[in-house]
Length: 438
Image (tube, rainbow, N blue to C red; front, top):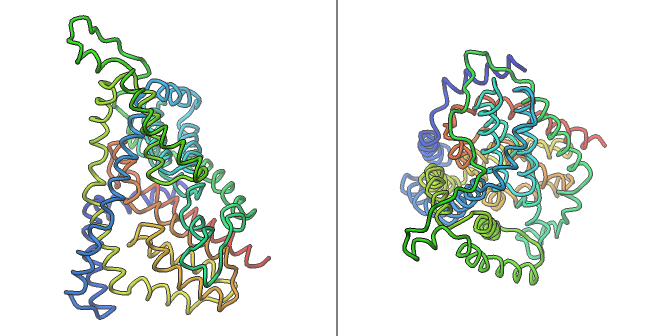
């Protein structure tokens, strides 16, 4: 494993451009593939890019707000104390990296936006406090927990919904047959233990270790002398305005959950984070200071998400996704189809890093082929879901929020992430091989 890790690190540090340059390079590659392989005109590809460019505006804003509100929560005394307690548990760098990985995966299972923030801050604090812990390794461990597909996994939840776009073909597939099937729960547990095992045993060379030098999370409430302030300025340092404002999102959430049940969406997660941040922050002044600091962490999202939306637009208009999916379908049989689905989803995910958007393009092809071959439909759905998660591990798109908090570049962590991609990919495929034999 040490040899594999060193090879992956060397390869990534030599060959991987920074995240923005990679998005630019992928844009050019997809444009040329559409023209040369699919026979599309340059005008068609340009129109696809332009039409797609704005498709992630809303999502980019949602991601920015998740990151920003999560940052506000993490900068509160209560959460800082929790992270401080977790950071005091390990007694060695290996244990510290393993704890970061496990906590990250558990919180990603609850909600990936929450996991992204908790993992990033825990990695920072672990690397600051544990001598010999390589900071990029801790951040990679935090990001690698994203492999888990938890309560907000969009594809199985969509297929379990009445009126889903494939209901006429395969019907409604309950999550008890996909997300919470015994074999899928078992795979999740295997990955949890494997993640701890892998990251707790990586040992960088002594001269490679980078200790986190940033400020620790502050778990104290600062006292401000307001005696000489005018009344309007005094209000900035009282908790009451925050608590009054928190009543709005809390009231909306209560009404929403009463009417629709406890279902989470990105917008509801943002409102939950906002309400918690308002309650836990001691004053509007401290809230504003946390927001000011958190905005810097959003800078990677603002330009790169639209670039990937343009890439997805070109992939869709050119027919590249359909061609790749159809090619994989042609070489599959009833036993190999889930594995082929997994690999196909992973490859296309590099160009369309959005599970829901990718499923809308590839899903009909894969499910109709599964029916024709007699393959297991729930396994096909989850194979696609895991494939979409698989190459996220080496795709900087999803790592941008975490990297923004950590203050690192994709090149700093991707060597470790590529190593984990190879290991977890082999594990997931092995489970589907076993399932095909049962």
